[in-house]
Image (cartoon, rainbow, N blue to C red; front, side, top):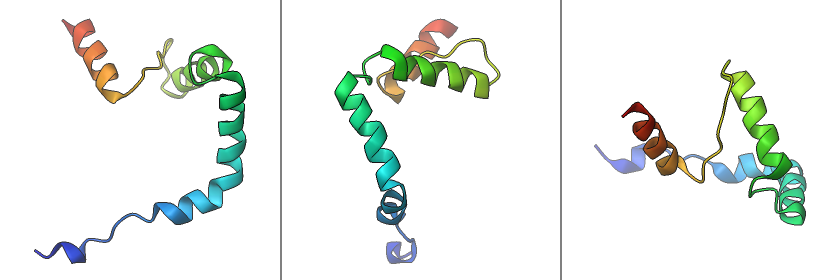
Length: 75
C-alpha cells in the first residue's frame, strides 16, 4: 500500500474557520492563567460531566495522566 493514497487531515482550514473563537478563548486563558485550575477549568469539568451524564469530571494535564489515574482507581 502506498502511503500517498492516505490523505492527511487538513487542520489549516478548520483552524482558519475557528480562528477568532480560538483566539478569544486563548486570550482569556492567558490573561487569567485559566488553563491552571480556575473558572475555565471548573466550567469545563462541570459541562463535560453533564455531557457524559456523570456527577464528576476531573481535568488532567494530558491523556497519559488520565489513563494512569483511571488505572490506579481501578486497582
